[in-house]
Length: 221
Length: 60
Image (cartoon, rainbow over all chains, first blue to last red; front, side, top):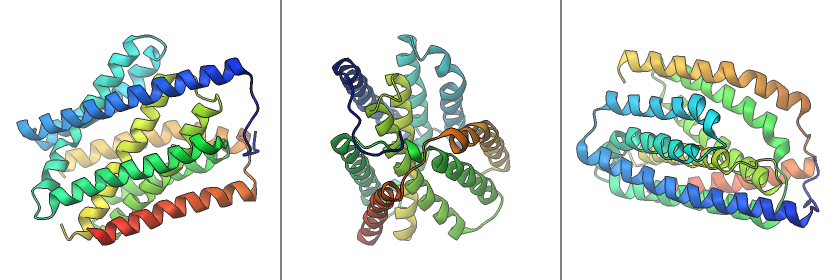
């Protein structure tokens, strides 16, 4: 399993993997679009930051505690849209704040393009080579725990350098998770497209917000 | 950020960490080990991401 060379598998298994992959990318595209629409709605309505945070917490809560119970039913698809929509509503005020800066629209557009570029390049690499990146699991989990600890510290200290390091670390870690999650789909480790979609959505969402933060700092905003 | 928001986020992240520690232990103990070649490939890919982000930061 540790070997990164393509694994030879039965045609049924390959067919099942292709179905999961197709469903995952279709649902991912729809949820990303829906989340973007909700972010625009959030900006248009002018949702207060407190309400936005409640939306984000509700989205995360549904993902963590409710979605696992419905991941094998059609209700799971509705829940994926609900939690990604809530995350979109939650991110609205942050994007609105960046857009209000002089170079804001260019920064947001660059962050979106950059996120798309990272996603396409890494996913494309795994899809083309079919390499197995499951060996990264332990490293990524430990990295995420360390990063979450650093975020807790940064909440109660005013250290801009730490915030930048966290954003940079988050981009790297989520890029690693993109490799890991995509290879799990390709190699049959993830057979549920709802779970796969949520994993990829979270990776993309975190890369976008972290990249936006880094670009905002560099643009003197 | 309001103080209550900070405490809510810190609590949420604490729950995440608490829930992730057993998973991380499991992966470290039972997960597949990567060869040096595999880690080198990963490092090159992530290095490419770093380079790309640096270019984006310069362009803004």
